[in-house]
Image (cartoon, rainbow, N blue to C red; front, side, top):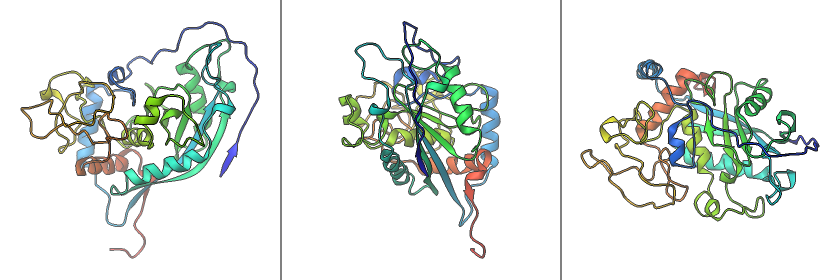
Length: 323
């Protein structure tokens, strides 16, 4: 069901500092635009990996079906005098959420994971907005919104699409976008939706050129299902040596993140002592849409095990009588 929930608010904004990232945010976010997810303490990581190793993959006939509720939220960004307004007229059309779900199903088509849109709505951020603020919303505002809009449907993947949000996903094992518990789902800048000029003309040429297929949400759903960046070390450090690089997947070659997201799409070998080139086409690298195109078999296995462990409600059993 789709609906418009549109409220009217009038606010006078004055100077305020931009909201900062919450303590402990993934340091990888400083080196790329695509996402920032909470890191795991070392003890928690070890516990998780032992549990993953013991978990089962999907059984024959089982499927992972992810119901998605999209929330297009306008009015969260306090604008200055010369900024484009963050209002209903400048929000993306709800039709783009259908394109986004189609992009997810395309990317995950060989993984045993599929997606279905169960709701899409437009909301004004006014009920959670602090008065007289410019710039991005605070963590406290976001937490209040997530709490209110997810409380009645915890078994659904809630995707919040906002103008200037930091892209963030709740990892499977913590089920929380921020440090702590209770804020499950994904927050994404709506500029990363599939680009269709008639539905949401984008002003940023870089978004239009590099992020036009909706694959940033593919990357974020990878985190939601238990994957890490392909270059990310066990302790969350993106900058250390190749020997420390592990995403806990056996078939993603070790590599380092050395450049920003300018859409190079060129073969690299940043860890020459290890076999294999950098996985430039992998969705869990930080390449833009025109480069990314695959998950490895090891990543698929990990997602299935992680969903079994931490999001078992998403698994549909095999039909009765199936082998």
